[in-house]
Image 1 (tube, rainbow, N blue to C red):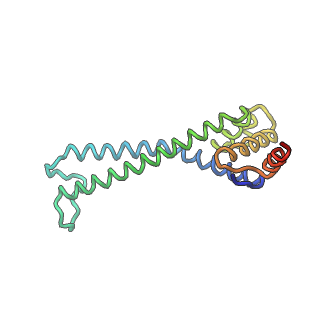
Image 2 (tube, one colour):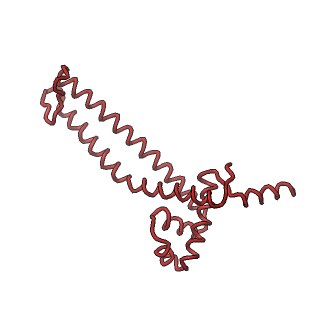
Length: 171
């Protein structure tokens, strides 16, 4: 467990949640890339070894046959597809962890973090959706971020750590 200042916990959790929000929006791009790569592989499978290398399958001056060139390209596309799938799976796992951690927060704090940091809306917009003042929305967001820092980033603010230490000494 990393013990940090309250400000550092909030800042680290905010960066993590905002980055996750941006990456979550890239899932649609990844899906489109995977679909395009799979379509390219399917098209190449349909070509077989007929020699119909439409679309620049034969590398000029490479000295290799069109079939070898197509196989190399197919392997490269397959590696790209696997890399995107891994990245997507990792992102989906981190999103699942975030959603589980968010579920452990107070409902209002979770909504504030979701609106302000994950969706990157303004505090004013979040306060209107939560029916609270802008200042209270900020307080709810910070409380939620501190708890998320503990759960997701294994960080704890000094005040909480000191309180836990004194409680353990008293037992």
